[in-house]
Length: 299
Image (cartoon, rainbow, N blue to C red; front, side, top):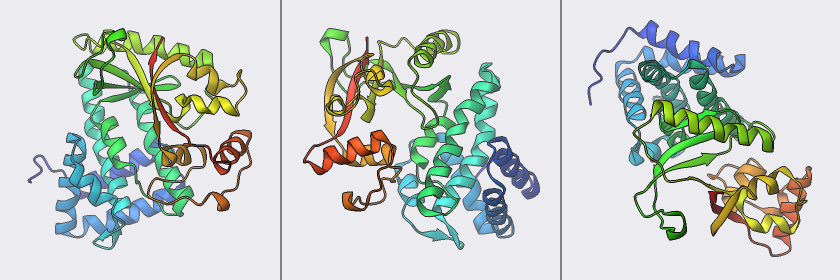
């Protein structure tokens, strides 16, 4: 695949560097990213790979690319997780152009792209390496499918389930709600986000006639009520939804409660629980409980 409109190496390096600053990356991360870009810029084959990968990330929905960038390998001495990060940072520039073209405020762009920082930190906390594993997830941000509006993120999707009660059938347009990992789940802030989302999609995606807001998350597993206070933020969030399905998925819980990436296996005996939530989850699982994710429709 050829990448049209290729710009000079120094310009590209500056774009990537500027976006690390925009996302407030720590200096040590920036230094490693700059070093990787130096290697790429001084090798034609690596430069071609960089531009082609950045273009594919902008297009979204490339499972082979996602598998390649998360396989634990290297290309040109650069880990694939670092390749994913530098290419996402470059693809941000194209996404920004699409935001401007649609008239979407740049503060929403910055809030949405903050997920790149969140998941880079997650990978660094887990492996002590700078890179990205959740590349498939972030491709949806770059492709203008997901937007952060206040405390919550919202994604345009088409239903893969039926709910006659809610007028939803397979293929119905929906807005699915995601919860970024960088703050308290304050009920008032969530309500403000729902209101912002309704106005946002009415303004910028008026032709997208969605049926409902839905959420598929570990936070919606009703089994959490076995050990969480009924007035906790998690249970208050859960109560905003009508739960229509429960899926067992331990790795989902481990990723969001204990920050253990899906790429790694879990040994309950080695987990260090310090917070009330962590202790509750760990005790529940050690006593034979099962946790996962619930699918809910906003009431």
